[in-house]
Structure formats: C-alpha cells, structure tokens
Length: 438
Image 1: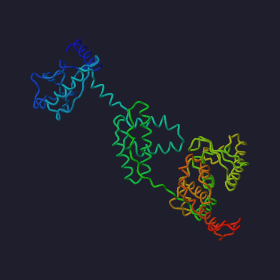
Image 2: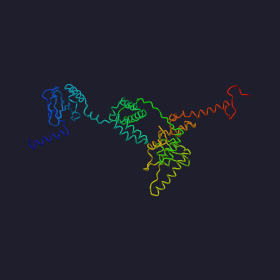
Image 3: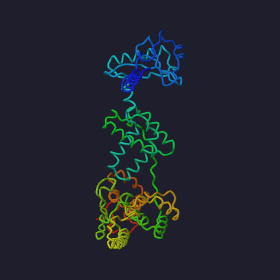
Image 4: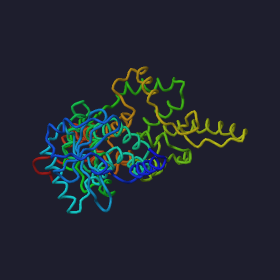
C-alpha cells in the first residue's frame, strides 16, 4: 500500500468512527438469502467484529465478533441520522423471527419513530434511586432533623434495596405491595407503613416533577399497628431518678430528667436554648422550628423542673464567664455536647441508665407517655393534657383517656356517697324517692 493509500484508509476509518455507521458496502453482503444454518456458519473475524447483511431484508444483518458471538442488527435512518439497533442474540432469534421483527421496526420508523432514541431515553429515565436522591436534596432539608433521620433510615434500609433500581415510570402498585409485605413479614409493621408513607410522598413529588402521571402507592392497605403504651411505675420512676442523680454524665442525665418532668419531645429538649426559658415566670417557649407541629408551644414549668433549670443555669453562667475571660463565645444551648453543638442523642446513655435502674422495654419516648399518664391519673382533662404535650389533634391525646378511670371513679364514688347519705354531705340531701317534707 502506498503512503497515499494509507492516508486515505486512515481518513475513511476515522470518519466512520466519528459519525458514520458502515453499511453493506463496507461490510459483507451475503450472496444468497440467509438461512439459520448459514448464520451459524458465518466466518469469525480475527479481531473486532464484522457485519454480514441479509439480501432478503434491507438493513438487516448479523454482527459476528472475534469471540464468535452473533447478534441481529438493523441499520436505519431517522431524522437524518444513521442508527444501528441491536435486535437480539442470533442464537435465540431465527432468521424468520429476525426478519419479522425488522419488518415491524421498519413500519414504526416509516411512521416517524426512532427505536434507538427511545431505547436510549428509557435507559436514561430516572430510577427510584434517582428520585430518592432528589427527594433527599430538595425535600428533606425543609423537615426537622429528626424527620430527616427517620426518612433517611427508611430510604436506606427498606426503599432503596427493594425498589431503587426500578425506573420511576415503571413502578407498579404490585411492586410496592411486595415491599410492604416483606417488611411486615419481618415483624415490623410500623416500619412497613412508614416506608409506604415516605414512598408515597416521593411519588407525589415525582408526579409534580413530571417523572410519571400517577402515584401507585394509593390504595396500599396499611398493616395493623400495635400501639405501645409503656408507662413507668412509681417504683421505676424512683429507681430512674436515683440512677440519674448519681450518673457522672450530667448533661445527658439532666436532659432525661427534664424529659420526664415536662413530657417534652426529644427534639424540643435537645435543641432548647437558654433564651427559650423565662425562669422568673416559669415558662418554656418552644420555638416553632423545634416542635413537631411547627408552631410556638408555650408551657408552664413545674417547681421541680424549674429548680433543675435554675441550678443548670447557674452552672451555665459560670462556664460562660470562664469562656468570656478567654474571648470565647458563650454557649447558648441548655444541653450542649462536647463540640459545643446541641445534644444529638442519648441512645447509648439511655441503655446504660436502663441497665443500672433495672428498666426493661423502656424507650426514651416512654417518658413522655409516663408524664401524660401521671397527668391523666391526677384527673386532668384531655384538653389540658393535650395542651401541655403540644398536641394539635384531640385524637392524639385520646390514647390516655382510659387512664382517667381512677380519678373519675373516685369522683363518682364520692358523689354517690354524698347522695345516698353514706358520706358527709356539705349541703342538704334531696331524697331520691318520695316527696320532700313541707
């Protein structure tokens, strides 16, 4: 080959690699129509691959690689662009089936379709993992930190492993039902229901973001949940108090003490600033940013809670005085961690405390239930209990209604005794039968 010929060959090859799909003129064209046996016997190239075109169908060919693999391909032009679409493995597609499929594709192409572009579009379509990434980046930051943690855990443990690889547009009601059923079968119906709830919110956003037209979570039947009602007994409260009083880790111990004395949520308590408290008036004003209802929650403090906070404030003032002497900014958090940020968790601390106090099956959140139970047992009304706990719906407080039986029974027994004369009436008794004497 001359130098000129080599230059022409390099130019032609480079052009083909850049933009041109080589057709029958550049590859091999069979002299006779293909048969299944002829396809199996097509020569194997020494390197790369070679396409042998079927004279019986325009653009249809068999690509043979140096490894001996054979696949049917179809060359076509759409929108002025040459395309090469792989139909399938030649060992699985007979000549007759490949020609029939090529004819179908040709009809679609003649009608304006572009099968290769549609296939590329499908490959690039967002998956549930892609949706979860956008959900985490755009939606979760607007939520409270505890909500972000819970949603993130549900995504990581349940949603991504089960459905992450699926295309958002291809997700079906049955796919979600299977995920829900597996989580329920694992013994965690609460997590199963929460996972569906989070996924439903994601798919509602997917509709808004035009990833699909509907939400397949709608209509998923939730699993029955057994509400936990664990209340500490007076003896357990006493043991817990003794353990907290003796514990060397004072910040976490005081945080738990305040949780029990106020019935506040963990997030509200850990994020509390000294500016939120009016210790002279005995009021805690929880900012909307820290409450579950996203509303300012103003509650009075009991004398024990106020005494605890007053003692802690004196210590905090001393520490901030030392910091000021070293030109350090004051610590504004009521429960600061070692890095100066608000306390994030007492998980490990709580485990050790429960072990020392002999408490079993008690969560930190059960301190809130215990506080509510004490209020109910003292005869306070459900609206008052709801107001102290920061409930916005009466149904949330209704779970404590049965705990009011004892004070109500005592009240009705007292009334009955007065009416029948068995007790000491504070006023004249009106007989229940007969006529009152004149």
